[in-house]
Image (cartoon, rainbow, N blue to C red; front, side, top):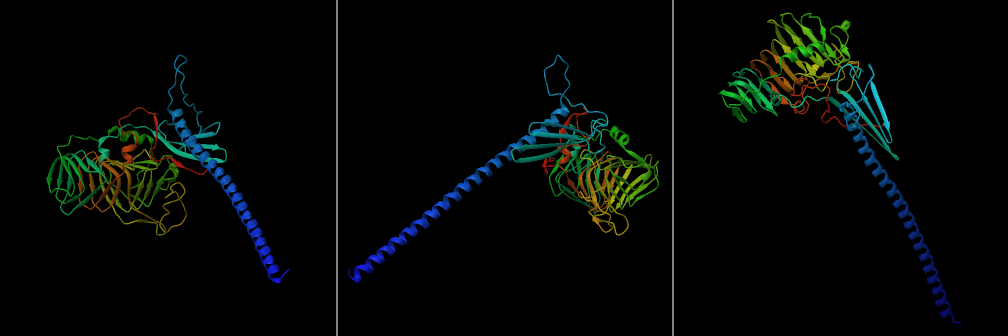
Length: 430
């Protein structure tokens, strides 16, 4: 055999060996791909199952919220009636009702005064927890007493039963809803926004104009007395300065304790009163009849404690001179102690600041003046004459139309609950 043939055979064998090695490597790669694909497919299947279980659990949880509401509202039937979902029966003093059915567990609780039986108008917390396979889902919602359709004035940022007057040099901003009056709107200043009135005198606003509007009316005047019955009455000691009132705190008079719903009443006996540099998480009711003046001055913060209650109710001539400057603690007073959280947080420091203004519904049984550059988020109803001499900004809150406060709707039946709009939210499974 020649050296040439031998070399050729050696090269041929080397190439064949290389092909074998390449083939083995290729097969190994294919096997790895197949194993990876199988693992991926398995992971994908498991992921798909988990996603499906999550969707089912979410639907069950939402159904649990609806079931809890249905049980709250179910009508009692006698033995001769059709079979219906039974109405829940609570034990006096009971704070929590809990029921578990297959994959669903739901709870109904009163987080205000910890008693489901004492007041059928109390908002309640609905919680639903669902488990399907390895998926968990939890939802919460607030149920409130259904007030029916809102009274018409709640569709305005400011409504006056008598004349509404904007003086020379004054500027008023109406954002999200119109200024309205059942009588004459006299504009000698500047209106940025829409108006609705029986008559318009003076300058036209920078917005739409509707005149000849039918009377909207105001809230039932008995509401004032009804809210007073729910309130914790505080003794009149002159001006209210640097105080914090809420469902869990009462710095004004600790001996009276805190009102579970943050509703407080002060009667002045016809004397004047000023509220300044204070934070109210609840409903402040001031009665200055006969003849006393009510003044909200400097920086104040008002937020209702309940989603179905006003922020301020007054009986008597009322002036809103609330500043746009923030409410500051400045070592003076802790305005977010236990019982009055701000943004869900409390602390013990004295260096916080808070945006000044009124958030929620204002109801004035008397004449009202707005003399500053304060912000009013919600709606202001004046059962009297309204005068604007400052530069206030009114921003409408449509929640007042979706869920009017107690007494500010057309449904007088007590105890028929509905879900508070926008209150449903997913939470962490306990």
